Image (cartoon, rainbow, N blue to C red; front, side, top):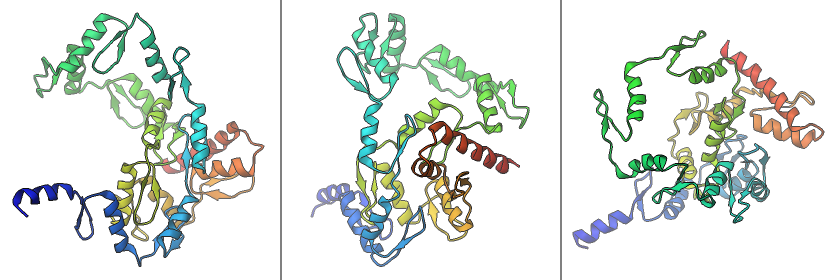
Length: 335
């Protein structure tokens, strides 16, 4: 094999085993190879702690914990088929051409294509209500940034953007929080910050436990977790919604998680996963049903319990129960 052939071969072998550094031409081959490293090692379920000797048994067990969350209405499903059918209910259709869209914003943007009074950018297809607005936008595509900051030399397409940027160098933050002393340049930022002190962050991502005070930010965050394409782990057989989730999952097998359990040493990719895992050690079940007194480690599992065991309760009842619990948790955490 000559040098050129060697170079081409190395370019194709771009998937590397992080345990023995062997190279592979595809992710599938790498997944199959990983099984060799874990054939005789027990696997522990991240959700309930149960261990399995066989990868197939472990994979079948994990399916029981599958959680599909609709980030439009926050309804949860354990069955993917039902979840996908439910998502279709939120599809919005254009009354002119019957095209369907996932969000109201996407539908509104599309409607402008039927309205002759709007001006469309031929490059990115965005719409503007005036020629001046379109002209201002087109500068972005030219790469021309004539307005330069004299302090850090960063360049901008518009003078107004430069003016906004310049405030960061002046460090003008006139709006101060009376509780912690933190300052903000805008009043709206202070208002959002104050919600954290009041424990008013009702929107909680059930996947990564991140909390939000603003519904729009919460929904925007939820889009990161929406299923796109299937990816299967060759080690344990667990199925993921996208390649990025699979890549994060591999860290569990190669001990590369950023969050480590002080009790057993297991590592996790998300702080929320670590917190839930630590509850198995401590026995802490903060989400307690006020009807039958059964406790759960997460908001999601309590709501599922309320839906299945107490169908007489409404969604508003679910929200009020969880809100009281999380207010108590926040007060306990902040004291």
